[in-house]
Length: 160
Image (cartoon, rainbow, N blue to C red; front, side, top):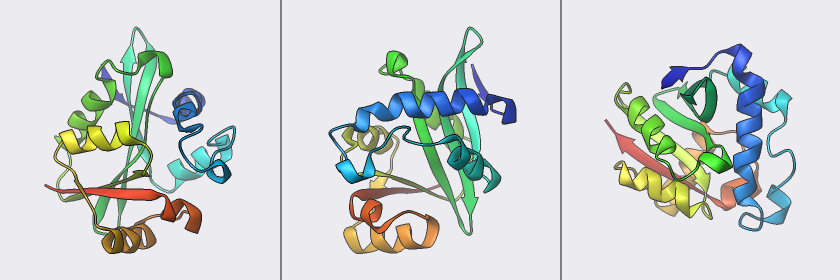
């Protein structure tokens, strides 16, 4: 079942993000990987900045989450993660499909260039990779991330 998450779900969302982000270890630059991958204060700040999380729940337990954030003239897909033991079961695709059915306008996703599994998911749903110069402009305009993360990230986009 897919449902909108609320403030009471933040502890579980935090747990899911940090569990799933273990996949980045050894793939993204060492200076960008840390534990926890996202601390609770940063997560709460994301929610306060307008990230609305949706979750895939099975037997009353959230297994995956995906955030949506309206920024200026676009919608960002943010913080898409599935628990390690639930990966490969279509949860990420189900969440993405559910959200895309409800979104109108330009949709952007930023992710690590090394996260080939995430890039493949978004491409299956019609997202196209931004070219290098456009990627840099998009990251600068819509995200607040370090220069190092910008260097090692990609942006995928879809117009709906």
